[in-house]
Each structure stands twice: as C-alpha cells, then as structure tokens.
Amino acid sequence: MSERVLVTGAGGYIGSAIVRHLAATGHSVRAFGHETRFADLAEIADGDVDFYPGDLLDLASLKGALEGVGAVVHTASFAGERACRANIPAAIRTIVRGTRLLVDESLSAGIDRFVHLSTYAVYATFAVREMPLRETSELLPDDLYGSLKAEAEWEAARANAAILRLTNVFGPGSGLVIKTDVMGHFRNAVAGETPIKTQGGGGQAIEFVHLDDVCRVVADLTTASREAPLILNVGSGTATPIRDLALLFQVTAKEVLGRTIEIVDTPAVGDKTWPDRFTTIEKVQNLFPWFPQKSLEQGVREIISAIEG
Image 1 (tube, rainbow, N blue to C red):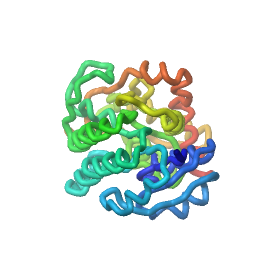
Image 2 (image 1 turned 120 degrees about the horizontal axis):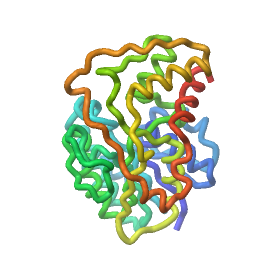
Image 3 (image 1 turned 90 degrees about the vertical axis):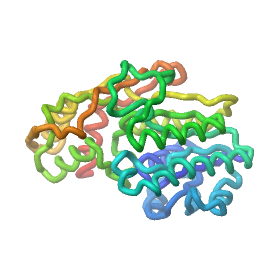
Image 4 (image 1 turned 120 degrees about the vertical axis):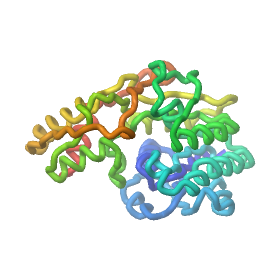
C-alpha cells in the first residue's frame, strides 16, 4: 500500500503546517481542500506533495483524492464557535457530514490509518468541571463548535482513528494563516504597535500547545494502523492566565523588536469569560516521551520574530 498521506483542510492554519512538516520529514503527501492557498503552500512545502482541490461534500473529488492513499489526516473544519455561528448550516455539513463521508470512503478504500483532529471543547466550554480534563471525562459540549466536533469524533471512531483533542494551538505555523484567537489579537497588537487588550483583569487561564509539537505527533501517528480508536489530549497540561500571556507578549516585543506595547484592561463581557480549563497529558507523553518540546515562551518569541521576518 502506498505511504502517501492525505491531509484534508490543507490550506488552513493547522493543515498547511502538517503538509509542510510531513513533506519535510520524508512523507509523500496529498494536499486536499479548497485551493485558495495551494500556490503559496507549494512554494514553501519542500518534498513530495501533490495538490488535489476539492470539497469534503463532493463524493467524486473525495474518491479521487483517496486513490493511492495509505493514511488520512483530517483537519478540515470550521475553526471555533464564532466561525460555526456565522454559518451554522455549512458548519454542520462540513464538520459532521463531511467527516462521515470521509470515514465512509476511507473505509471503502481499505485505509487503516486515520488521524482526526478534534478539540478539548468537546468536554465543555462554559461549565465548571473537575480539572484536569481526562480522555475518560464525559463529553458535555455546551457550545455549537464543541457539539459538532463531538459528533465528528463518533464518526472518526468508526475508522479506529487516532482522535486528538487539541487545546489552543499556537505558533507561526506555515505562515500562510494568522489566527484570530487571543494569540492572534496579541500578535496583531504588537505588529500594529497598538495596546494589547485584556478583559476583567485577564485572570482566566487556558491551555496552549505549539503547532510544531502537534505536527510531530500527527506524523508519528500516520505510520501505525489501529484496531480501536486512540483518544489523546494534546496540550501542555497547564493553564496560563491571559494576563500572563499579555505580559509575555509585552516583554518579548521589547526584547525582539524594541517595541513598547501597552497593556489595557477593560471590563469583562459576560459571554466572553469561562472557567479555567486544562487537560491531563500523561497518555500522549507515554507514547511520545519528548512531548511537549516547545514552550510557551519559545512560541511567542517565534510569533513576534516572524512579524518582521
């Protein structure tokens, strides 16, 4: 069987980084998805990469993309609650039905290596839960994004997938996409030399994982077939308060770029805060003793260095 790896959502923030990493580490890769960023990705992905434009919901293109493939990495998804809320019907089709069709066609093609990227939002976003969140914790999603991703996990499990529940992924990645989460906002503040804004004192703490570490885990998981689903929390195992992250951006911007960036705190908006969340990562560390390799400090330095890179 061919060792070519199909990566869905190849033009996205995570997908493009995975394509680049797999190609650089000797894998043959097929990049599948909307071709908006394919030309740019082709310029930075060194190695054996072919590009197959298409849509998860188009069976003809899906079948063609899977020809000659030995493993699938499924990253295609709406990214986060805001994106899902902006187009609920499309989010449902892509995340749930798209995953179902991909699993169906992968099984039909005899593919026994499937890596599915999920999120720790499947545990809950707003509810107060016992910490740390474990792979055995009950799935109680309480927003649209987490609910759809939980449904997608059920589909991926039919392919005995390695299901990765990612925390907040950060780092410059391929450089093709700048995130619009808290890291993206802080990065843009440094780039534009405008104040970094926090809310309610910035005490809320969330968990981060570097995209390079995610790519390494994914690459290793594409090489082994599974007889049962493998579920892994992929994070740092600790939660960082937003105010600490803001201070890290402020200090690093001064050290790297010589820029003095102000931090401005504003009153918290009710629906913009939620309980601290962090996971236990012993299971992924048992498989990959090196994990995680890149620290929050390293990643923030990379993000800021890339501003004038």
